[in-house]
Image (tube, rainbow, N blue to C red; front, side):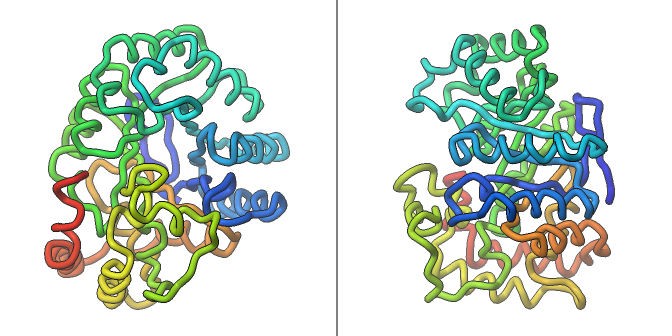
Length: 327
C-alpha cells in the first residue's frame, strides 16, 4: 500500500488507515476476538496507521490495540490516540496536569513509553487558539510523553486556528464526498504549513456504502440511533450531519458513480485519497472483510475528472445546504 509522509512527524503511514472507535463502543457490540481479527486483517492488507481515543469504550479500543501490538512486535504500526473528553467540555479542563494524567493512562493502555501522536479530541473552539494549551502540548513532547501532537476538529475554522501553531503536526477533520468544505481552505493551509491531514468519517457513518435504506434500524447503543440530531455530541459525527433520509437518497446517486469493479464505499475512500494534502483516511471496520475491502481502495485507479465533477455536482445539489454553513 502507498505510504505517505506524515508532515512534520517525519514518518510514513499508509494512505488508508484504520479508525477504531467501533472497537471500543457506540457502533454496537464488537467482541474481543473479532476486534483483534479486524486489526490483523488491516495490517495484513498493508495498513500501518491506527487511530483511537482514550474514551472509545473507556479505553477498551486502546487496550485492544496494545494487546495486538504486543502479539505482533514485527508490525511497525503508527498509533494516533486522542485526549480531552474524560471531563466536561470546558476550556478550563485543558491543562498540563490533565494532559499528563490522560497521556499516562493512554500509555498504559497501549503499553508504550511514548505515544506516537496525541490529538486534542474535538475540544471547545476557544482551545484551538490558546497559547497556554499548545505550550502544555509542547511540554508533553519535551518530556518524551508524546512524539508529536495534533488536533481533531469539528469545523474548518477550528482547523485553521490549530494550523497556525508551529508545533501542530496533524489535523483530523471530517472529509468525504458529502463534506467538501475542508477542500477550500483547510487542506491548502495544512499543505503549506507541513501539517498532516487525517480524514475521518470518510463514509459518512456508512451512508456512502450504499447499504442502508430509509427503513434501516440501528441498535440502541449505536450513535446512528441516539445522536442523529446531536443529542450526545456534535451532530456532524453522525452521518456527517446529513439528514438520514436525504443522505440515503444521495447515497444511491453516489453509488451510480462507482467505477466498474469498485464498491461505493471503496469509491468514497478513493475520492478522499485523491484530495491534495490528505495524509491518511481512517475508515472503521467491524469485520476482517470490511478491513480488507477498505484497504483495497488504496490500489484502485484514480477516479476520472468526470467522476470528480459529478461528486461535486451531487454535493452542491443535495448536501451543501445542509452542512456547508455549519462545518
